[in-house]
Image (cartoon, rainbow, N blue to C red; front, side, top):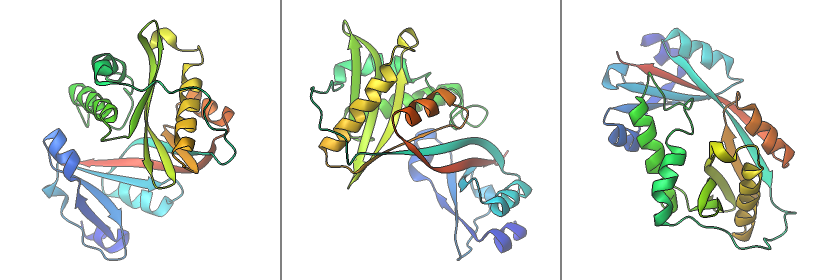
Length: 235
């Protein structure tokens, strides 16, 4: 690991929540000017999120055996001119959790929490847990729904930090896709964030998710950043 210590100025910090949730030792590589690289043998998995334009660091990661897992594109909606909502929001309740589990457990098969790095069962458990916590106001602050005859068509979770809101999860049931559900959920999320006095709403997706990107841009979002996720496994 000497080359990595000298050139990348990297420090690995334990990802305590992920380690506890997945039952393995997971670390996150952070680039810094105070190198303190922990040997990768101490971890089952090391993850690194790096800007797409950081070519030198990306090259060094690949030289050290890190694998490109997926990309991430970050978009931002400006809320300053958005009118306040005219209709009440449809909030998810604990009674909706079983249906939300079914909606979200298989909604993101190509996310970074996928095989071979995480099992399919682990991936599904992760998203079930996330949406459950969103409904209860922990992972995210709220979960908004769209329903037809008491059937959930889609759902979106949002969290708030100071003047910034961020979408956590967004999914539409396969039976209701291409019917504008995602657009209406995004509009509801924007209006909820505006009601909480947020100035902006952020959302991330994968670069190959062209439908989501087109939807965000049509609704006025601007791309702000692009990242790569790299993993190194201790096999």
